[in-house]
Length: 313
Ligand SMILES: NC(=O)c1ccc[n+]([C@@H]2O[C@H](COP(=O)([O-])OP(=O)(O)OC[C@H]3O[C@@H](n4cnc5c(N)ncnc54)[C@H](O)[C@@H]3O)[C@@H](O)[C@H]2O)c1
Ligand SMILES: O=C(O)[C@@H]1CCCCN1
Image 1 (tube, rainbow, N blue to C red):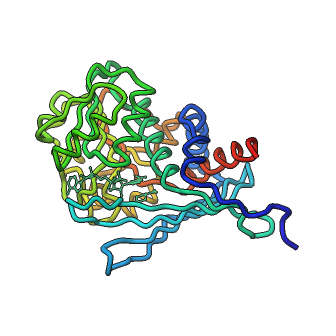
Image 2: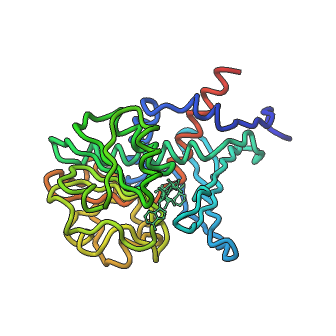
């Protein structure tokens, strides 16, 4: 017998309409905390990846089960090592909601907005915990989808005196600055962009380091969002060795993060451990939050979207 639900398709516009940072952030904080408990019940295997060599990319499968909420879903995300000048998106994602009792699919949802917003929301949580107490200068490296979602949530959540952007191509940085809701200073080089910055987000497709420790102010917080393969980097060894390293999942970082694996840096804590109070937030030190993305983050976001969708239909 099937579950009584019929299959619904929820597109990008609806996900955008139903997913708000003010709802997403507190729920992600709870989920990250649950994930980092030794007796966790939520289930999330490390991403399974299928190489797509012909296209220089991967298909990532990201299932998750939120046990307390009896919510089961999986994201399917293709991500590519695009040429630097390419205008094609580096990730495309879809989320399937599955009835945990009967096994049938209840909903197919756009995953691009979910990926953009939940990733930025988790970086904002890292900054809330780890950035210097008086943070005035915020720098974004990259000017793509993640750069924009990070700009949106960081400027919505914190008050910076200056926001700077650097990107591979100046035209893209200028387009980014025009699309942003507030003033953004376009920088010519990474060094200029990060000089004196308190908070730095790296959201590029780089596979070799673009951010070097010698340029980063002591005590700054870096949320590193790109470089999600064991041999890809955005940050150099100097930065990885001078910073206290926080991750979303230790297991994920050990399997997938070039920054962690190649530098040999020790992971100090998961964000969830800081949220649970079992590891300290070393705000006064230079900190790196290495983000790789987790299925439970997608599940939290997809659940919120589905709740709102049901309310409106
Ligand atoms: N941590 C997570 O959960 C998570 C989630 C989604 C995406 N990502 C990763 O974040 C990164 C950005 O994703 P996006 O969706 O914004 O991509 P995007 O394609 O929209 O933007 C990528 C940006 O990187 C710049 N760029 C390209 N090649 C570069 C290079 N060699 N050096 C420096 N900059 C370069 C581009 O100009 C562009 O500004 C990707 O690496 C992606 O895989 C991580
Ligand atoms: O968690 C995610 O959704 C992304 C997909 C692309 C690779 C990095 N992580």
